[in-house]
Image (tube, rainbow, N blue to C red):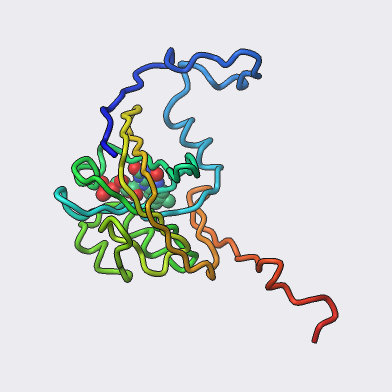
Length: 202
Ligand SMILES: Cc1cc2nc3c(=O)[nH]c(=O)nc-3n(C[C@H](O)[C@H](O)[C@H](O)COP(=O)(O)O)c2cc1C
């Protein structure tokens, strides 16, 4: 697959109201500040990932919560990366990325990849391997999604990278790491029904 040309969404007119849908209350106006928006977004608890790449642009990675599944046929996800970040140059030049979803014991890695640390030091911690594309995958990630960047859209301060997933890996045994209200939280793993001991069993 080839990388498609970038598209920039410049203004609100690009998002017309959807007929028949309720509109959002009061604070959705041109006067809404980035700070107000970030404050509201901080209430959303979400999974934490390391997004990594390697190739002609060099090895790089950053902590991300803006990761979302797009489709399962074909398997596709998206990642939002700040164009001002130190990792952005590498992601612009490279054609693959890997999303490693973090467990509760990976809080230190999340902080390390969360900025102000050079790439060498970020990758000196943790055990890394490759899956299919050559992008670094965290060996004990809750799940890892490895694939090719097939499209890029510039939206506001960020680039949205669409990634066609070619390989996945999972340890599946650990508690998950969440980030919400500007701090990390542990989400305990719930045993699957087959693993739950039967009532009355010894
Ligand atoms: C929990 C958490 C989630 C983050 N999510 C994103 C994200 O989705 N996209 C992004 O570009 N930066 C995100 N960041 C910020 C980057 O990890 C990083 O701090 C930023 O790119 C600046 O890094 P730099 O010092 O290498 O330039 C997140 C940081 C944290 C701690």
